[in-house]
Length: 239
Image (cartoon, rainbow, N blue to C red; front, side):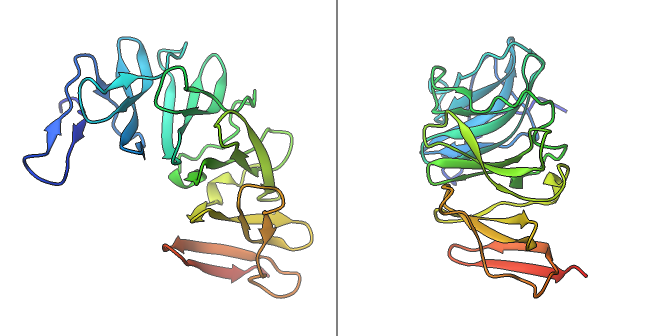
């Protein structure tokens, strides 16, 4: 079946080439984040599974992390204009969000949940999103229902912004979408139930939009799609 390889292209046959590296074995099925001409991906060498970056050349392809667990699990990546973000599961620290600026010294953990499954059991790409200079993700500490979290612009820390459901295990049902600097999600409060919310990454800029249903009913959001300047929502009132 062969080994997955890293290739680069400028959309022409002449400009399509394999990126050579003697120790690089890219993993299939792992998200790739692209930021300012740099691609970030998970790959395996003699040190185990790590996060790498590349500018499309052999000289510009390098390992960014050195996890203690050689079988660390890395999944979905998302990029902001300044950093790339990704999930890591390592036996030494469990599951956390990490970020990188494309250098080994600039690659670090953003969260410290100390809880084995803060991101739920879904591998959906819609639960980690880069927008402007921040990353947004869904998580629970295990002590309260799941919340929407946001990183600071330096990619060093993260804080919760809004509750997204009444239970802690609803992460798999959620989606995040961005239009410019605004992020849209399904939020929850006891007065209005589940409705469409938006945030700019600040507490003051996080609010519920007009209700999608009338009265005490909340809305089951069936599908969400975003264009460059509009959000489309298919909702079903819960009786």
